[in-house]
Image 1: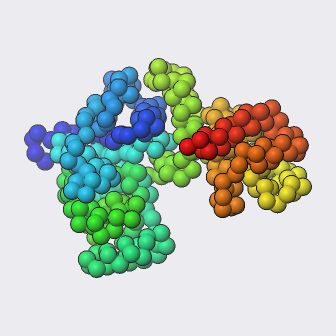
Image 2: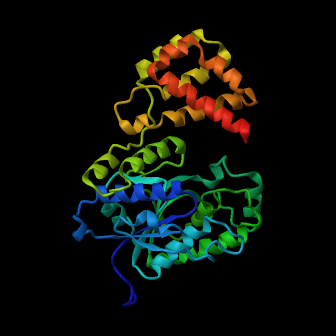
Image 3: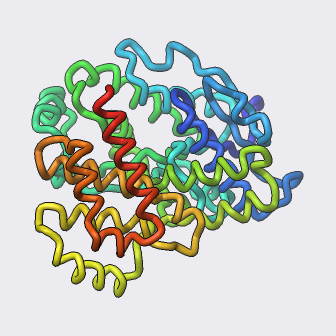
Length: 358
């Protein structure tokens, strides 16, 4: 290891674009600090944030950096920036873990960092072998096969976490080259960055996962963002206060749904509603339950928005404000929604009105 290489492990975040990504990153960082077993002065890791809006992190013990404008590469592929940012840190530090913003910690970062060892790629999750994946577009598969990279045994990786030692940073250089080569051939492949990382590591590094340590909410993002927005609204002024850290632990990885017996009762009762809108009403009621957890209660509008998207997809057309008014006037819905009905009514009609104006 070169003498200039620094030994303190690094947690690395990349946050740019709209404010929600910055708020996600702040929450993830505070969750790391809340779970840390060491006092601030004795903490065994540092945190670096590459961002286009450093003011979000002014009250956090992090080092911020500007994002190199060349990191998106010749094809301006924004996920390429992840690998370039982590590579820049590994050019200076012995060990680093890049963590996506849409994450939060379940346990101490020290445990996560201990899993980063030579000869190993730490990722968030290890997927099925490439040959068993139904999710890759056939055109992308054809291009990968064309350039001789298709290996059915290759395990896919979820790169919500990428942990490496500097001795293995060549994997990132390899994955960046693959992205530059394959991006024009498979522009429709959203997960190209993850695929290139898996291709670069295949046969070279062992794979490790950390879903037990970090929750990556790439699915049902609206509900988790609602929880995090509620935390940010409450604590952005003092994100490291005792109350803020305690509330971080209340933001759990479960989707807030009424208890099963209650859902079963609702399902039986809503069988009286016309079939066309029965499922719509049931989904609305997810947001009308009086959850004991305040951050679960914050998901109400996310559930209502998702119910609207789902019904319009099932119908194959947008709902009109008139039709929504009629549906929301259903006496059974009013009874089941209870005190939440006026807020539900105002929110959905507001959504439809804004859509029609646009």
